[in-house]
Image (tube, rainbow, N blue to C red; front, side, top):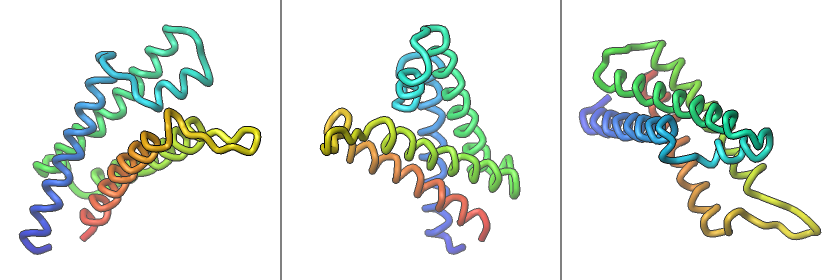
Length: 145
């Protein structure tokens, strides 16, 4: 891998790891509730204790993902461990996109397609999720080179 490509890869992996760390901290501390947590809560529970448990689990997954990616940036974790964990993050994020954006936030009732909260916000959220997914995919591909 040439130097500029290696630098871009490292910068992308660093940014993505910080993203997951901050997202995890916000979820664990309760300062933010992600779309996924709100969606799971609306489907499966009205119980506040269950709600905080779901938020805690998703926060821990995001935090651990970010920490492991960060360790990979500084090459403290190498090879197959990074590949395997990045592949798991990729699959988790893909499932999250399908579940949140296309099941929870799209509604087709009475012949009308509606988006939550509105089409513009839905498209912005979807594009954000796709950027995270693509970054994860590129990290996975570049670690194999």
